[in-house]
Image (cartoon, rainbow, N blue to C red):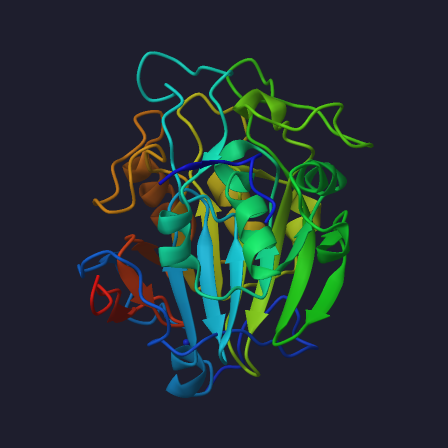
Length: 352
């Protein structure tokens, strides 16, 4: 059943890490909590047999798992702990991929769908506050007690939606946080813009909204962040984006092992987006495109491309800008290890 979001309260080279001076942690066993979707094979394109970085052995890569939650979302499991990034799972229709976006579309969360994918999260990272990033976070925070990290706007929206303010950490970018088994580096980011160089649904909140948010129009962007999460001692670092633009000065020197990069729209106006980003990140070992799928179709089916994005052109730009980088096009149903190679399959739990 669906509930209104506002209604419930109740790869011997040292690892390339942005935090070379630090160790990070992250993960849960690959066999933990499986969602209600069948097994399938991941799509992967290898540009070079030497593209995978050696992290001093296979142990570190195996100790971390990554699951794409669609859109920009990820579930990262390390050492029995779970981190979520932009977990939007309910994926309801707003008209965006049909006749046109209806700003008055009511916010809602499907608890059964969300619960089937998130496990027991300890931490939720939010890039910005648009509904396809924040939409399911209030329910997740209220029902699991996970700590949420995001902007001030995210803070005010979540508190208005019944989340305990004590479970929300406001960040601005530049913070390096040790949180349980993970180190999280917060990176100032930018949201993508349209052909008129304008932002979609801009706005920030410096105080609680006057009314409880009820529609997608009630969730402004509120500034955009990226995050670099390093998992496990000697484990991989992953650069996570929620939108297809970036601050070149902010990301330079991060040097992640994995880069989950948002695919820009065909009408994007960011100058040389892919080559500039890969250069600033020092050519990551693996690039994983995200935010190229139709996020209004359920996760039970295969990913369907957003017609406003050109995934093939993006992959070609990555190959040209960084020939040694391996690209992995993710699938909803595959569990990946720390090298972004298929490690396991999500299977239907017994009795379901």
